[in-house]
Image 1 (tube, rainbow, N blue to C red):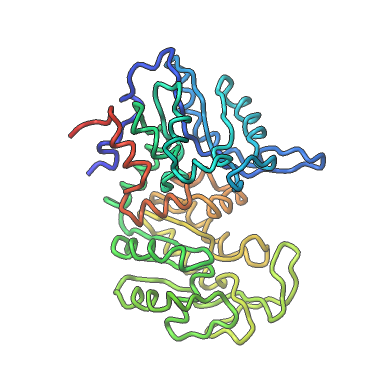
Image 2 (spheres, rainbow, N blue to C red; image 1 turned 180 degrees about the vertical axis):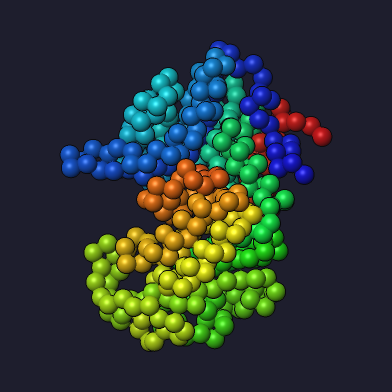
Amino acid sequence: MNPLHGLPLLGDLPDIDGRRVLVRVDFNVPLHIGIDGRATVADDFRITAALPTLRWLQDQGAEVVAVSHLGRPAATRDPRWEMDPVRDRLATLCPGIELGDNLRFDPGEKANDPAFVDSLIKGYDAYVNEAFGVAHRRHASIVGPPHFLPSAAGLRLAREVEVLGSILAHPARPFVAVVGGAKVADKIELLKALSSKVDTLVVGGGMAFTFLAAQGRAVGSSLLDLEHLEDCRALLASGVDIRLPTDIRALEPGGVLGPSGRGGVKVIEGDLPDGWNGLDIGPDSAAAFAEVVRGAGTVMWNGPLGAFEDARFAAGTRVVAQAVAACKGFSVVGGGDSASALEELHLCDQVGFLSTGGGASLAFIERGGDLPALDALRHASNAPQE
């Protein structure tokens, strides 16, 4: 089935010339605080990703107002999370677009309060969702407006659905998924969903140590999730080709992790001694993972392979990121830390598709493409009928 089936697109909106259109964007971007205390946008990727939709609406003669959240305010106005720096950047990139207040200043946003939905849509003639990064959230600005306004998926949101849906349904083979990150609890459902779809599943990062422990390996003081040990054992016994690190770059007992960290580091094959903390895949594992990735027909990468914020433990992520960029097949990279790693390595323009959503990408795969935002849009009054 077409991943976009039943989803209203921009062309399904009624005439919006002279009309007011509310656009939910995901401008939750990193900020840089200067020596004068002034905040500026440190990375405008999510802003630029929304520009084609905003400009399309402007070209149709619409009056466009964008709304987003920023940071994690405690459901009240917080000067640290005012939208001003984002508003300034947007004004430079796309003049004429109004940007509203931080949605999460109001408790009604996360609570999906009907009264907040009513206040949000008042005075608008149509709604567009261009916020794939929060499409997995059942928040007021995500699921509320399509019940009351003609609605559509923005160009970028539609492309996210199309790409992720297509590689899950009809990937070019071999299909390789590289999954990293710290906590196996955050990714276990993703791994289960992928296990029936991929040809090879590459597992790294802190989550790999629970898998290694499930094999009977000693993991020292590395991250270990005992609650999901049986889940890992079941996946290992499922018959799917799972590649785990065979050597680990570890920090000695008492060592400190971080940009200015200290302590001895060495590469260890096999079991980790007591007190040693595994923080990156070793060079042999990185080379083996990279070889699998370079030969993929489709490769999907989500999550770093080590604690790459500390240069001593960045090599594994760097090697695999370079392999993803060099892959002749179609490459898809999830947002979040994976995107940050690509940005640091200047490889963003060398992958097939860079998603704007980390958690949303995971949820899309786990739920087979069923996300609250997409369900709401498919029930809009102007959605295509069967």
